[in-house]
Length: 387
Image 1 (tube, rainbow, N blue to C red):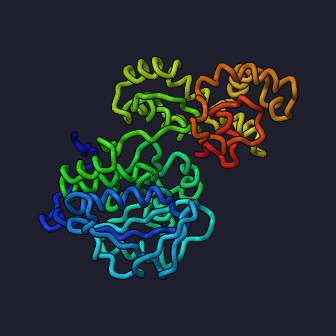
Image 2: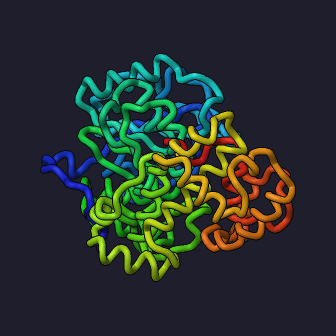
Image 3: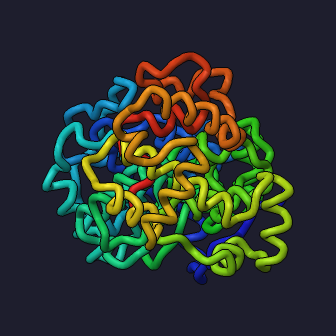
């Protein structure tokens, strides 16, 4: 098995290749899986077998004080030490999680800035990248977040370049990761970079997985994208969803995912059942439907936000998709709603169903039985596609 090397590496001194040291900063309500998968793959690569001896890798848990930090699932983790000299570590890893529960600790933000000033690299995992942006460190840089937190990043920091179609991204002295199980892929990449592929392979095998995904691997898509196996098509779909207000040209999307325009159009139509432009158009109309129901914007403003320069064009496409005009949909006319339900069946092929664990049930908002995928996604409280 080969560990993918998709990010550029820099020459490392022999001493740093023998030892990898990470300091973890757990933010309040951090996600436990993002933290535990990374620290466990480090533990397994640190020595021979599974003896947990920190011979090749070491780590510590840092915080502004020694009070326990509560994760998003309620489990508490005790810090080992308070903030001190960050140059003891190769990386400082900021693990985020739930947002808006409490403001960021000023001492934690100051420690991030101190770490950067000292020349130590920073890693943001889950919403840890948003915390780095909050510290003023990500201006003009790419920041990888989960597709679920894409709009959170955009709303808070319009000076950051959001990335939600990859697992993790390196931009200068910063590495940001979408979180979840992507932390495992990031951990394998770090171990491969510093200790060699053999140690990464050994750790992955003990964790009962046979390979790490590359940094540029596509994130699992939101419900709107359905189930598409081709990684390039999935990335293209995510790029379209991230740019509904300012639609990208097909040529640019194709270049980003490593295909020619003709190749992308061919494989996209084969797997999705429509062209790239048709898919983009349908999602933008769908976004308009959501805005009409959930915002006070005028129909002209909705059309503009959905990437239509001509409101009459938006009106025509809306009527063709839902069987009624935007104004009728906004009034909640029962006949128009019934017509919209019939027309909506043609778009449900994009949606897919919730998985066996019911992962999309949280998007339900007193919706009628049988509403699937994207209907659930669009009914959640957050704006799913803000730009």
